Length: 514
Image (cartoon, rainbow, N blue to C red; front, side):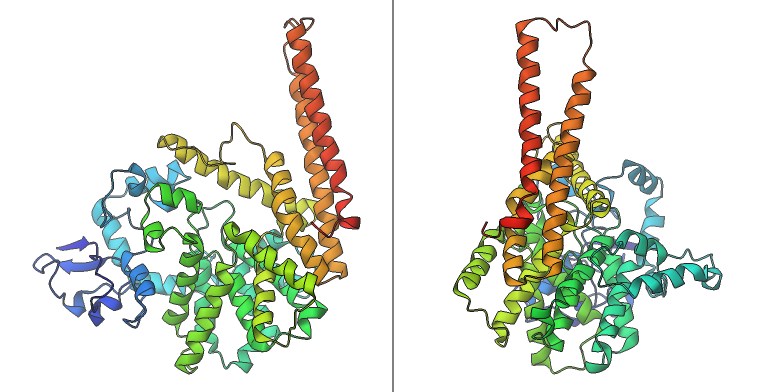
């Protein structure tokens, strides 16, 4: 009989045994072994995520020892640092799906434990070339028309109207793998950096797998969309003639991994629920640090750059973190002020490595929040998905008697209101400065789409207000002064909203100084 225990959290200044380093989450001990004694290495359950860290990299080591946030609660583990807050016992993977929670509860505890320990089968499953194909369906019966259409789409991967939703369907849910591999190969980076094809493919498979598909927004499709947008920016003349092959490699990997392991809730939620990630990163860029360290973990796990000198690997990992940390929305004004200062002083020199890296940071920031700049059909889908993720967090906060985070209350907010505010205060200032830096057709197209999308949301808001007015019971005393005042106030608010949408059309033509 085997019993699963949680790996105890070791002090950061205490050397870690090598047999512990090869394990990412839980360790399987026989009932006769001591929890704090040295387990027999043969009894260790080697998971698909097996990785060995240098003891000097204590932060990355600590993440792996704490275990994967998605499976901590499923096998009966409890956090090492106990807390009275009920959220700590909730599984991220089942936050938004009661049905899945019930299905998991229906499985007996021994079956769940065995499933977690079947790491070799999991490794084989994660190594399949087509992750989305059910095991019982042979790969050879896939319709070649779909792969042909996906191949045709890749020929226009630099088109700003690229439909990432369609591409993900055509690749059977493997859009991130297929797109990133194609771009790396198109730039000749696989051959230039002598990347092992098997290791590269395994790395991309594991990256896609570690995105939470249950998240409405922060999932592998979003990562693929950001990667495609990053490619569009890398093709801009200002960057194409200045960036090195190393810069391009770094930018594409950062785009593909920038939200790796995102739990579907924001940083304030993790802090107020006393989550271990918030403690680990001291409440500072919690999610971005988690994405970065998770990406570094997969790079080391697959040995993708193991053939490079150690100092080169260290530089790459550090600069990868610098790019991913730049996507922290709470630091938006810092980066925007620095960008604006460079543009005002006209002192950006892309022959300077540090300036090129800063531009990569700004490009990744733009790619991360470029949804309002897409054509309406695509932008509307992204807006609905991100708002639904906000609302699901709000539902959880209500359920656990927490203060509902801003924009997360579905009863007090709408998709249109949230999107108009986001465009006004976050997206427009950033993309206006990007257009100053790279005044191209793409920049003007993005600003034009954003203006039209903002006006469209304003129009939808006005229509919804009109419908709600018409739906009021006719038996109400519409002739009273109170009813008349309320109707006048609603109409006045609708007029203001419509006016805001109309003014937004003027932004692409004139406003570049916000």
